[in-house]
Image 1 (tube, protein in one colour):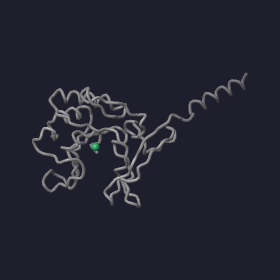
Image 2 (image 1 turned 90 degrees about the vertical axis):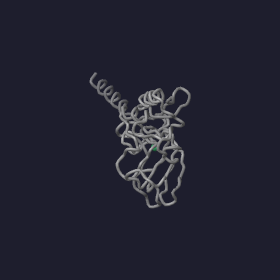
Image 3 (image 1 turned 180 degrees about the horizontal axis):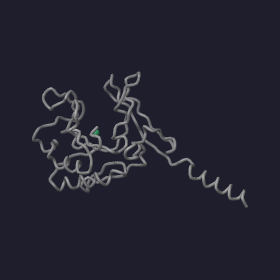
Image 4 (image 1 turned 135 degrees about the vertical axis):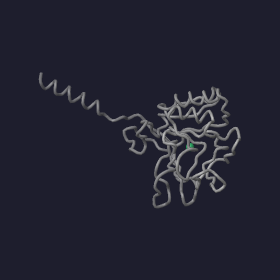
Length: 209
Ligand SMILES: [Zn+2]
């Protein structure tokens, strides 16, 4: 009898550590800092057990996999894709903001790309953005640009992405905008308020980056 128990225990053990062979798929690109453009588009398919540490966000457990993203309603008429762990709170925040009068032209969520971190020898960025895990959103990008050289907002700031931020414009976000207060209430930081030389007025994530 003893051998049977041993074999059964071995079998249970093996099953509990067996590989997660669900399919993970995503398309990705890199930002090249020398060319100032997107390079090396690729489509990736692998099993979940082959994901590397940089393909999973440590804080949320969200991954770069398309399979981890769900549809989020923008006021019931339009949709965006976000990681299932953050989708509900963002949907509530957007809905509340719209009810409080927030003008929303566009919201972008999940898109996988290496646009952060150190450069490799060819000038390509090597770290995934928070959008890559479906844990960041961009609101009204055409009126809420990403600026560099921008410790304090002013004419010296250099627009790098999106459209110009215009004081008083109903699509340009500010500290009292309903979407800013709602997202902060749900634990997100606004890229327009992050310290340092970058101001990303369209952007929200847990870190602000
Ligand atoms: Zn963003």
